[in-house]
Every structure is written in C-alpha cells, then in structure tokens.
Length: 267
Image 1 (cartoon, rainbow, N blue to C red):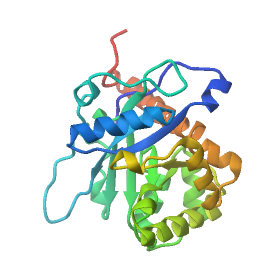
Image 2 (image 1 turned 135 degrees about the vertical axis):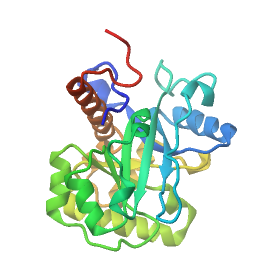
Image 3 (image 1 turned 30 degrees about the vertical axis):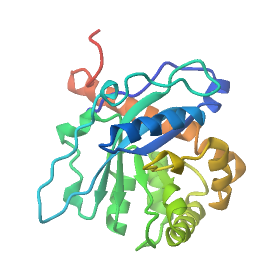
Image 4 (image 1 turned 90 degrees about the vertical axis):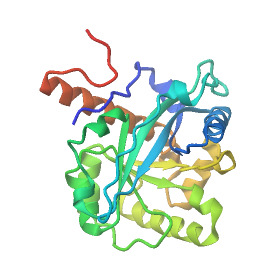
C-alpha cells in the first residue's frame, strides 16, 4: 500500500522535543467549526494536527471510504503557531473502526489519500492482528466503554517493535463522567502492559472547547500512569515518530513498486 508521504525536513533534537502535535481532530462538515479547531490548536502551541476521518463499516450496508478534502479548501490561511514563526501543519488521517477483519482493506486505493492510517479494533483477535500484521501507524484504544478484552504483552510488544503507536484520546473524558472512568481504566490497563512506550495522547476533539494545551495533556498523562517523561513524549516525539513511520513506509512501498507516492513531486 502506498500512502501519501507526510514527512518534513529534519530538525535538531532540541527543536524536535518542542514540537507538539495533536493527531486527532475529528472531521466535521461544519467548515467554520473545523477552522476554529485548527486555529485553537495553533493558539495552544500545536505545530502539527491531523484531521481525522472516521470510517465504521457495517456488514449490512456497503459504505464508501471517505475522501479527505484538500487543506486549502478547509481553511484559507493556516494560522501561525503560538510561540513559533511558522504556520500550523495539517495532515489527513483515516481511522477504520473494525468489528470484522474484512473491514480493513490494505490494498484499497482510497487509503493512499491519507497521511496517517489508524484502526480501532473492537475484539481481541482484531487487536492482535492490528498489532502483529496490519500496515497501520496508529492503534486506537476505546475510551467510551469498558474494554471487552485484556491487553497481552506479546501483541503489544509486536506493535512496538514494528513502530506502531497506541492512541488514548481524552475529549470523551471531558464530555461525560462515565466515559471519563472508562478512559482512565482503559488507559491504565494499556500502560501496565506497554510500560508507557509508543503511546500518544490526542484530543479527538469535536469542538474547540474540548482542546487542551500540551502541558495540561502531559498532566493528564500522569493520571493514566505515564511517567513524566513518557507523558511529554506522548504529545511530541512519539507523535513525530508516528508521522515519520507513515512517511517512511509509503516511500519504501512506492519505490518497491516503481512509482511515486501520492502527492510527491517528480524527480
């Protein structure tokens, strides 16, 4: 599968650590709200965000994989990041919610339109497959209900070795007290197994009021049993690793197939 590369030019290690990312802003057809989400993220100091298109196939009805809108159609001028002299970077992401193995189609050409590919498995078998074999960048941990299975060390370690990251989103915890409990319980269960490695914290925000600044999210990470260092990396360097993982694999696959990645310039 050849997806659009999302990598940027390299920077020094000191600047890398100061680059904050939120790789999950929920897409909405309300363009004004989406613009406000991007502007708020820039104001809070996020250098990179990803617009997340959620695709939840069903067995009964055939559904089309969404096609991301060009960024210049979503917002006329990208806002400058607070504390930096450059505009915010906006990526496109697809999240496939899976209740059956047929829901993930690794050769689907529609996947190539996205910078990041994520899955949210709803069964232990699918979670194991996502960790061990699926060509994805992010595995989402459910936060709206109690996990229907226990995390096991072998698949978690398999995902970590392959460079796949686990995402815990926090906006559900803001909206509802019951979901707040599930968010904390599921996150803590994950941390007990992965030891804080390869974890990113994202908002999954649907409106600007649900966004929090990077340092507030770091404090939230401590509530999830992340160490102080791992919590900081969960909104910075681990997010960057996920973006580079997507870009590197896209370039490798395209070179193997003898063609250019989508969105790249000719040599």
